[in-house]
Image (cartoon, rainbow, N blue to C red):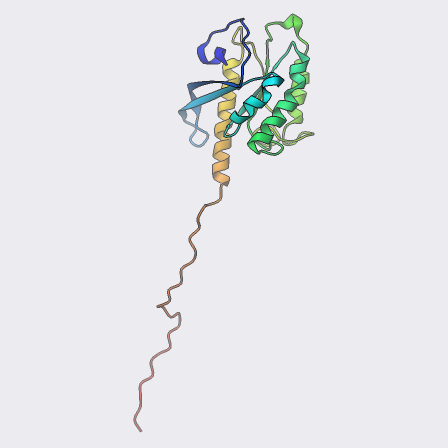
Length: 208
């Protein structure tokens, strides 16, 4: 997150407790007009360690997209993707995921010699979570798999691209939800009580 926000990298590790927050203005393509527009990303980085997991769930509600990050050198972090995705969906009330915008990042690809998770393995996981996959739910539109990026916070490889993908998917889903949203109020039909549909002609009195 710091690499994306400030363009800086530090090798010093500091565990996130609860959540860290940053915001950044970006230019994305408006899905309704096709024109560039400025959007403000509010980025919450929740604690990834299990002992801090309960502290982060309060920040899930209201999220427009979710980036799931694993370490390509640590199989345990990859195996935890299911847990984190399930926990997120349960907190935001999205059921099995449906079309909620997820993006998966495999970080630390600069340490290729220590890699334990291969790209095809991660891509298979992303495919299994697509609307048409074995488990269902996860990406925008038509059974597409969850977008997957191999990244490096150290070299900045694909970091910008991953966040921009999440922002674009969030805007697309927002527009889709807006189009599918039912009208909150439909005015009832009116009845004019003063009006007669077929008024009978008035009869004139006749004298014999």
